[in-house]
Image (cartoon, rainbow, N blue to C red; front, top):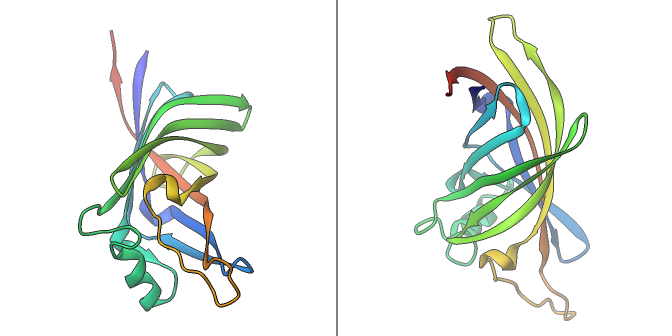
Amino acid sequence: MATQQWVLEPAHSELQFKVKHLMISTVTGNFSKLDGSVETDGDDFSTAKVHFTADVNSISTNNEQRDGHLKSADFFDITNHPQILFDSTRMEKTSDEAYKLHGNLTMRGVTKPITIDVEYGGTVKDPWGNTRSGFTVEGKINRKDFGVQWNAVTEAGGLMLGDDVKIHANVQFVKTQVAQTA
């Protein structure tokens, strides 16, 4: 079977996160510098081996002061942990267009297994002859599992931040090469 390589198309990909603020509203942020690759047996995405990185310095919540705090040792600690990494362990097909992606997420130097939902958007040939595949990714993690402990108590006794972080990504991969295996 031929091993197929796919590379992330950053111009057509995005990674967002959402976290509760003051437990009454949600703050949305994103990482603008992403890199990733997928290796499949032929074009079968159920065999996908996924590697993905996000440059933490590219974080944006549309608030410069908050972004600076998120980059500090209170949160992501970019001096010591400049990237968020994900390496899959298996891709489980649950329907024609849906998968469960299992893998290890590393954030702030802590690696934990996670499972995220993946929706296959399709594969097309673009006007320049490239084959592209698109996916929507949804998941949720507990930030404290990854050493992101900072919080504050409000005047009313509530917490400033929620522990759960919702992850949403739209990603596009471009087919690059086929390597024959024995």
